[in-house]
Image (cartoon, rainbow, N blue to C red; front, side, top):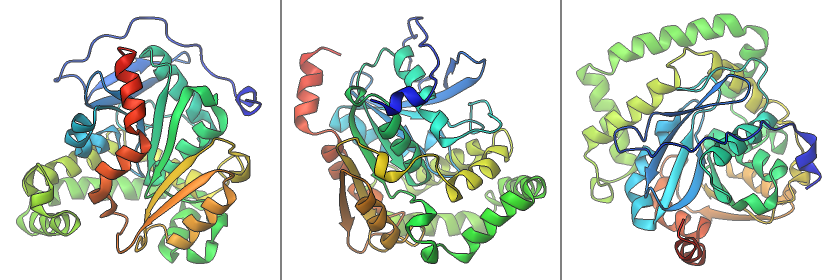
Length: 327
């Protein structure tokens, strides 16, 4: 609770949120107290148990579209937020990871959600931990990290040379790097419509999840991934450049000070993006962490276990209590 007093939070929006239809659920916005816009999407069951999902890097609120069916079956209402500068959310100069809990609280107040779970995927993990560190514990029913990022001080020797180069570039030459990203995205928008690139993407997707495991065709999954990716750059590359720096430097809080009990972590043993050694170190430094390692799984194949992960994040008892309260 002392951590809560360290950050200034915006006042909640007292207006009654509109009921989202199927057509508008993925393109919702909230006007924050400082004039910024916060974009979000909803998936799963409209009346289900609320899970606020924090997307990876770089990505957007559309990332959660891939679990829509899983969430419906489980009785979960997935609320996926665009971080500042991604998708529909206003870019915020000098954004800090520790600013994020304030935006989360504003959205929860607006949607009249008194208690919710948070789940950070990949680069969204520090934002989930920031909520665990700063938000009142009674607001959080669960905190989860899915194939998450870890602070670099958990094992700098395990950080790839390409990521070190990116960190150096965003610090020393952010403007040229942003221009480079914009150029790459422009070329990519054209390239993804060519047959060779389409085949490459389809082959990659089929290696991550076999067709019989998915409710969608390979073509539909490709369209889903491309929409999610390009939405991240809807406003250009400023958010990507800024967040590359945030993720590779001090997160603004110590892992040892995250007192929330408990932080659930699911990670693939073969994750090349974030080596398991860094995650084990992070779990050891968190006072109350429960790490589950999936043998043979990578950063991208861990999603095969999403039903099991959802059941651990929001167990049956929480679902039953939610239903009994008529929320």
